[in-house]
Image 1 (cartoon, helix red, strand yellow):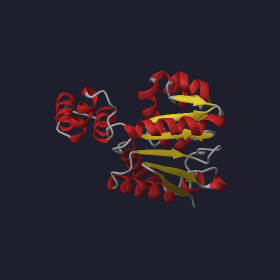
Image 2: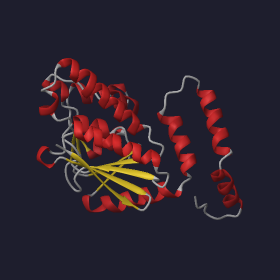
Image 3: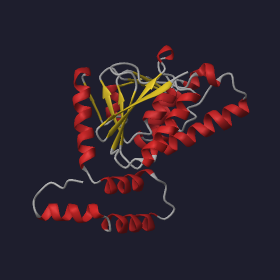
Image 4: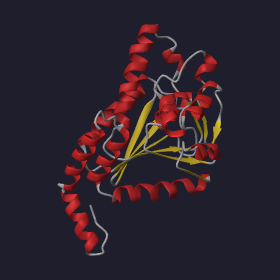
Length: 252
């Protein structure tokens, strides 16, 4: 049974996938643990950014635990494994605060689908990304193909899914799947730079700006009008405007 280890670093919550005997494969216990972390984050406004990573310096996740899901009936697999798993992933994707995935090694299948739920992705040069599902008679059921399509385009998503093609860090950057990649010894410094910057911005503005990008809107005009009213009415707006005219950095 896997776990999600958590630790707080000031305003940053670090979540570490941990299923050592199975290369951090995702199982029911880890999905439940992730959902618990989502609830905690939503209760704690002091969390300004979330980092999701696998074993530091090693594997992110080998994907969904095939031994767990292969034992399920087709109906249970569809409704619980895929359906409920997707509900957890969507809640994680729509967290109010920014999220960063750190991918340093193997990141396959469901692990890649989870990483694609994050707002930013930082890769080490040893990162290996792949959707192997169709090669074993399965599909990327946690909406990974659709998320990849929105990031990299339909052609790239179909190439990755249908050919089960492994993608290295350089190609992932070219496709837009990761925002940056760096040498293993530079990952922690780059991560700290990103999280420091994320923790300096207005949390209210960041949450609203993220929602406008991530959420589906039946009426975009209404969504932007509502968000504009909310952010302009917030104390963060007044603080930011005063700092701008005083030529100082706003401290939110």
